[in-house]
Image (cartoon, rainbow, N blue to C red; front, top):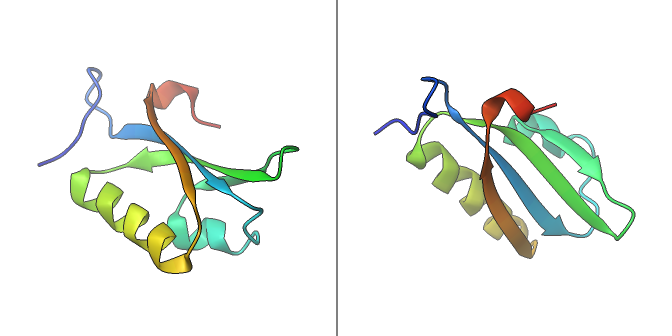
Length: 79
């Protein structure tokens, strides 16, 4: 099952986790990584399907990082 936006593109997500992840993790997640001033990290990017989303969430879990939020957004608004 592919998760597509109404425009036929993969769904984009914003994931927030506690702490600041090191920049090399951005490549592992295939997302843009931003350190937020409040001590959290925001990961933003398109996800091709639900399996890919669950894989990303599993990697976060395996790192022992606390997941704060997962929000689907319009793919046109990704950085």
